[in-house]
Length: 490
Image (cartoon, rainbow, N blue to C red; front, side, top):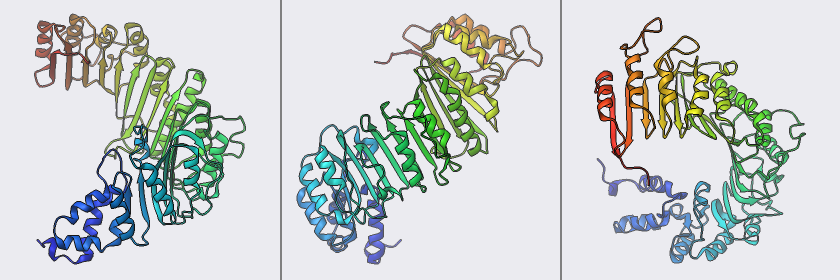
């Protein structure tokens, strides 16, 4: 093994560059690129000499660095393009309630060197600061991420931002949406805008201009407007679009975008919808999501459904694929029965059936369950049920015998989790006896497969240990787990 001291300088610099690459952007960590670099300079004199004489290592400056270190870095970087970090990535901007110490001086220093910007992450405090930032000449800029403490709009945008801009993330900041500098974007994120949110027409105009987009994220308030003629120009095909996320948009806004945009390469789609005033749009949007997932997924896949009294989350992902490859939506303020029926029973849009389905029930009472369970008849690939803080009498009764289609309730169920739920232990025992062949054989073909995992959790003093011990003896010790006398959540 070759010692680092014997490596050619070029190889040593490549190793240091790769090690520091994660610090060219910052999420929640307080560690900075320059802070790490200064630490490496203290290893030995040779390392210090090589690092100090390599301008490309000094090109990332951070608002958390001391002013003296920032000045030294700008000087040592010579004319190399700069990475400016004055805020975390957009996903973390919401957690920054106060500006960092020395922020104003850092902003002024950054704008002074705008002609060298390669990437910039910055938070601004007022419209004047935003205007100054967005009008700074930046011919080398590739990535621009800006968040504003106060929602605002800049009226003009520098035309000196060159054709290299590929990544744009705006949080609480509106810009001239028709700006020609946006035409070559690959990533677009617009969030935390209410009064200044772009209309559906403006978004569609921008998308038509940015035909090379790979990822789009829109998190806008209900104030974002949409007109009936929003899609009058016809369908828009974005052949490279792989990831799209719409959250907090009105259902009408979302519906127009889904109807208009054709995305043959999409691998990730996420919707978050408040259907309190637009329940009639539920089925068309679910059909569109299912159609997109069906076209993209040519392999076995799993579905996870999280069901609550006024909310349903649906998640679909092909097996043996990265987590980033998935389709999901959350529907709020609409009867859960209708949503469940739409996602489970509308088979016309599914080219392939799911290999397995997991359903999580949260805080459902007996009346909720009684209506929901009827929708599960004929859905045989439900492998896992998890119930949290629910009234379980209806579910256990449903699983004990035949249903309207002359099959067991949940005939393929392999895993059952019961967490802090209300039920009669004798009902649980009756269900287990029936499914394991100890009860009346009311169905041809025998009972369903045995459980692979039966997990039960109770609060202090709530468990009927005698009955649960009988259940354990029937299903087997290997698959049964009881968490008893568990403290409730604070």
